[in-house]
Image (cartoon, rainbow, N blue to C red; front, side, top):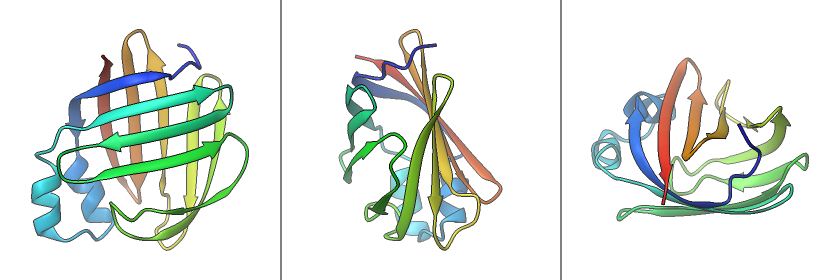
Amino acid sequence: MTRDQNGTWEMESNDNFEGYMKALDIDIAIRKIAVQLNQTKIIDQDGDNFKTKTQSTFRSYNVDFTVGVEFDEHTKVLDSRHVKTLVTWEGDVLVAVQKGEKENRGWRQWVEGDKLYLELTCGDQVCRQVFKKK
């Protein structure tokens, strides 16, 4: 594994995205659209500073953060909540804790070879996404 997550990443798989969205109380109509979409992630990393863009034909989401610095995040394209997010390194894995209305919310992201792995968690639901470097 490596800490370098720079690049453009295209989605290969998206397991249990609907369960994750349901845990976030996202409307069924939006869930049905969202599970059909392929996402592209563009990550511009400079050390511990990240600028990330997640793009799809339906919605796009940008978030910039510095590892170890808590920030206010508005998850407007997903469930439109305000959370306090803290991203840290656990070895070569980025780990985000999102404090707000929902318990056990956050994500883990890491690179192995030409794959980017992302696990999204809310409550007891875990969505596992895999992206391939373009």
